[in-house]
Length: 127
Image (cartoon, rainbow, N blue to C red; front, side, top):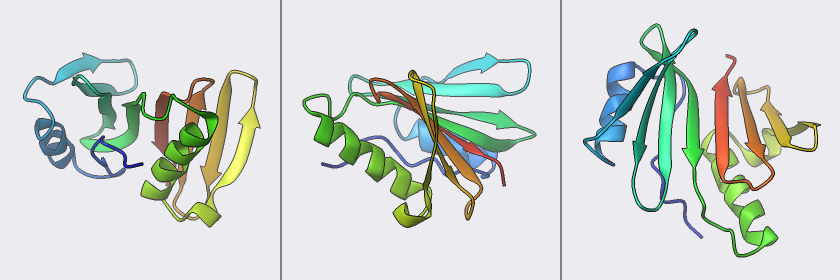
C-alpha cells in the first residue's frame, strides 16, 4: 500500500504548504476559524489540508479512505501516516475515548488523532 495524499510537513511556511496543495488542485478552499485558518483541497480519491496560524502550518488534515477493505490495511495506512511525522518507534498510544484514538510523539512534538473509521487523520504540532 502507498499513500496517495501529499505529505504536508508541520511547522512550514504558509506559502510552502499552499504550493503543496496547488500540486493536488488549483481549487483551494479557505475557511477562517477563530484560532486558525484552514486550507483544503478535494479530489476524487481523498481530501487533504492544513491549519495555519501566524503564517505557519500548525496542523495537517487528511480524509483518506484508503484501506477500507480490511482492518490490517487500515492499520497499515495509519502506520504509514505516522512514519511521515516521525519514526514509528517514537510514537506512543494516547487516550482512546471510544470515538477518537490519540498518539503522541514527544521527540518530534507531534500528535495524531483519528476517528473510528480511520479515514480522517489530523496531526498537530506541539513543538
